[in-house]
Image (tube, rainbow, N blue to C red; front, side, top):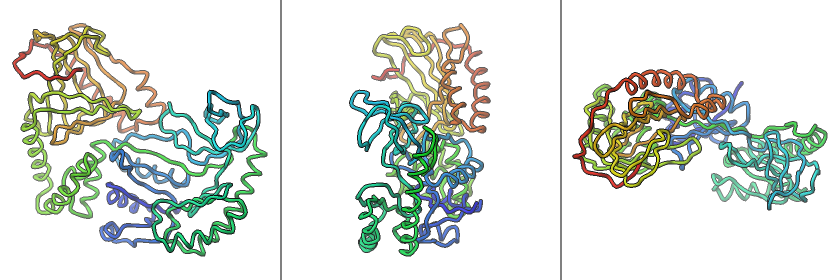
Length: 485
């Protein structure tokens, strides 16, 4: 299949190289990437799929476009980039089918969908048992989110998305006033015929002849789609507009992309790690990239890690960002009590408990004065919490398995919880908990084969390390923290 892709975001050089080497034509290429890869910018040529990062999660890559194109590009990325988490939305955008309205639930009009109940918007009347064409208008990545559908079905083209109405809107990437005026003129005829038009970013520099030709074709296909969905059986999908897929890039994924980028331009070790943590480091990363061309790769890696560890020894506190797959982040703060002399940056964090309760997972009393020692290591697939009473006697251990730990030189620690945990209470042995949630990740395809294999190896290693360990009482001489477990 011949396809074209547009790539944007902090991973664009590396991903562009991977796609180009696998037969994908890159379009709307930035001048810097065109120069690095020695390819044409291909301005004005429409993309079948866009690969980009979103500002609210710089560790995530999104694919969106025509279904076949998304499928092919996702196959290439999954074959090449290691240790990613994969999220496929329950529905694409503008997936069209016939639905039946079930009526109001509270203030929402509810209808059937192939995936369960859906909230119907843009409806003419919310009459129970009324059958109508409907289309999805929201990407659902969280299984707890509501499916949202509209009675106004849409048809997706390379330059425009059309539906019924009398509105004209533009992608925020279309900023050229002359082009906006031209697109308004092109739209006039179809607005009079009762069509609404959403101009896509592909229309910004494309040939007006191609744009007008597609718009004429889309309006004819739209009438055919309406007739087809009206005749279709209830809930049968008759049209898929756009597909999407999301990838969470782990520490290992970013290291791999560093090496890909380094093959075409100077790239400091941890380039993508820096950029995904904090945009304020961009200028620093740019300078380090230039300097990296003068340093052997092995020496460069060692220097960066040594600098990290030295910086961490100057810090008093660490903040753990324990991210759940739902997107929720649990923050834990503690004192840095030790920075071990490991090859990769590592920390031992101390927290003193200030309130009573029960420890989750361990199901033992949480008592004032308890001490929690948390061990984290860059690139490790787990985080270990060890609990001691106020006399320093071991109470239990809790190990969460997660994506490889990322530790920034400022003391910020980040990872994604993979819903599998190992607990040990006193000398009573170890057990795995949350296995149901972990199995759901496998069923949903979130864990790739390489991630699963590494997790299994990590399970075995941690079992031997934690379950057979003999704990001696610890000293409470270190300064206390005001935070809790």
